[in-house]
Image: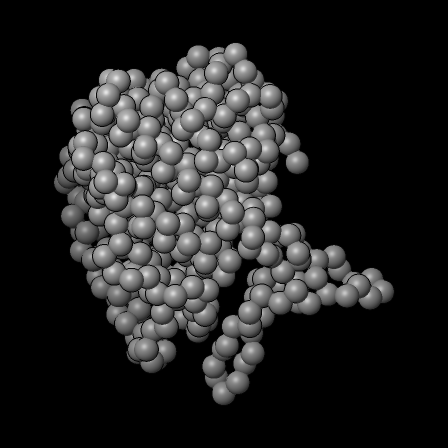
Amino acid sequence: MTASSQRRRFLKSAGALIALPALESLAAPRRALAAPAAAARPKRMIFLNFGWGVTNETWFPNVKQTGANYALPPGLAPLARHKADFTVIQGLSNKFANEAHWGSTFWLTGANRYAEPGQSFHNSVSADQVAAARLGGDTRFSSLQLNSPDVNNSGHGPGLSLAWDQRGKPVAGLDNPVLVFHRLFSADSTPLAERQAMLAQKRSVLDAVLSDAGDLRRGLNKADTDKLDEYFQGIRDIETRLGRDESWLGVPKPKAAMKEPRPGLAGRDEIAIMYDLMIAALQTDSTRVITYRQPVGTLLQSLAVKVAPHDMSHYSPGDRMEASQKRDAAQSELLAGLIDKLKATKEPDGSTLFDHTVISYGSNIRTIHYLDNCPTLVAGRGAGIGLGQHLVMPKDTPLCNLWLTLLKGIGAKVESHGDSTGILPGGLRG
């Protein structure tokens, strides 16, 4: 039996496929003579990013208190019930970061924006897309990018999501919980034959475009040739997505594990429902890699904070600092709720989603205009690193060392990522 058939079981009748729910007896059959062992549960990765940094004085633990015996600072206090299951890491940064209000653009890449001669902006592949290449082969969506419509007011910088593809080009995300719900769970009412014809038509159009573009190559200078090569790569990416769509045409989407979100959610409510959608996506194995570029401006509004988010980030003692601390506490409360639900969601073998998931939470900005010591928290027993600790790395340790460590922990065959210099001290743990 192939890994794919072990992962999903179907009933076939009259040309239709009906996906069976995840059944414990299928995932872990009673052992007979020479029966194969049940397949290990897949790893998952969640990347959560926020702009404008944190309140420096009250979010970071005391640097003199390392290991397990450290006091949770007020900004992380709502996570107290999960203290044994997350680790706070200080001292990580992206050495090429030079934009004080770009909290997400290079967070997962560690790229040098000036690395391309003659260009004012360059990026490279993000850690989530490296993870998707390793974990996304057996799921309908290799990765899921979540956004907020409040990006411009949330200190994020350029990009369409946290994700950047192999060419360093932005990957689009979904910024509406209702759209996310329908992407994951709504059945396509278009007949199968018609959907097949539509995909065939798209392939035909791509073939024609490639043919026409190929004729242009003759006589182009190097700059134009490079642009055309980039264009061809974009076409190849579309072909890959079409091939993936074709492979899932006959497989119905899973039944929704939650109700459709009500429209118009913003701020705290938006983040909470996006977290619920993450749980549903992982629970149904629709994807194994998720990123979320979270709102800050609308979060403040939902907390009845009157201070503008940019002003809040330039706090001093008083209303601005109080707003920043209120933001920190709300974000930690929401993260604690996500961890609660990951721990409560059972896998077919009796373990939980939390046992096989890595959650990375943070920002590319420490506070105000400071780009060192990026706020970093890692949770989930799928992390491959020790949990329940406060770690202080040597100053300016690459943030990409964390991404490399986590990527190796999920089995990705990578020797470096971004500006990494190696895995975190202590290495990987089971």
